[in-house]
Length: 515
Image 1 (cartoon, rainbow, N blue to C red):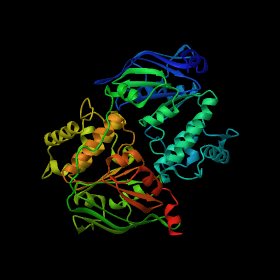
Image 2: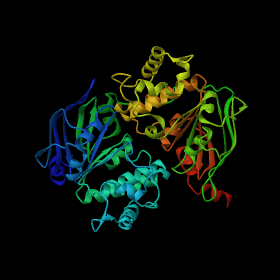
Image 3: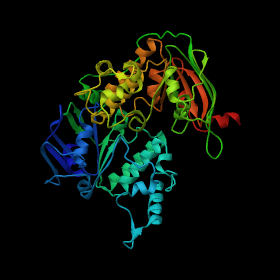
Image 4: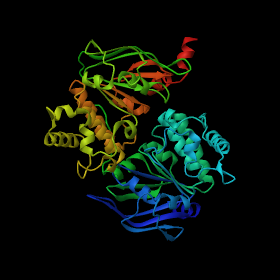
């Protein structure tokens, strides 16, 4: 599109001029100028800690600018809280989900804006019906009465999106909306976005999946260290241009640079099962093995049973079956603590819920699983603990102003590195990683993957779960594919193709094969 034609088709609905946001010890935004165009997808990209989420929190009323002004349709606005932003038609779907696990889907969607019946009580039937219509629009079969805590994280993300759609937002901010969605759900989301654009909604779309940005974006803004380094219509933009503006380099990929050397088998699972409520198995007789120094990628679509398998290994499901071995010895420890002592560590998919204690400091989170290493009799050696935490902060290049700041003050990618650091401090022999790059930018992802390869080189056995086909092809030594709880294929990464791996992940493939 030409500049003039684009401006006419997509008028500016919100602007920031000279926007600066200062936190204690850091300047998150540095005099940024940003235009949000209506009826268009405004892509926002940058490494973790670049200032993307901060800028969106300012627009959504969660944070306020330290300096600068924000305008809507040319008039200055100042949102003191999120409620004021919502009143101006601004909705946000956060990367870190904000749902009440004990409430139903419909209760979460209408929380604080319930449909009243005669001004006396809540019309739950009307809320359930409205929720059903939203789920139909999102092409999901999620019951409005299901407690959100019973949903997988991808389904919870759908509920967050539905919550914003229910508010008829004129400006909708989507922060990593596809990070936990299956390929089918991503396509549904893109169709919803096209529908919203047709109705004049201005969308801000934040994602680290660069091909996705090029496909869906109309305008792009790149942030680096709180400064806008590129802003233009999407026409003519390619991945090298985005990466160059994000990190200053033409590329930051993660190709394998040396031949891996494997040792003896370090972990083996035999016939692992996890019964599903109502019959059948969430994990259906899964067997696998990993050698010392090997990276085994477990690929599959959402609902394939990948995460549940890792949870079985970590003793999170007492009613699971099967046998597990570490270095040839049967794993009999019945709890998470015992599994950690035997040399198994898990990096969970949902870092906010399962990996971190948000009110504790960065240092305390990193050392939480290894405090015994810093304890003498009944006393914790705080100096040794702080030194240990600092060593891992440097090793994983976690961007912190101080190790004693709350972990909640970090960007999503740096929080993920804290979770990885906590796991590594337990000195594991087998590292389980569930979607390790979820919500991590291209630079942080490369750092995490380099760390994984280094650990494998030291003899660690790594099992990592991912729904990213490029990622599993690039990082794995072997690839195990799951669908509907079963293993549907095992491949040597060096001699297989993405098409073969994707075909094995088709949900009904094993049934067709059996037939």
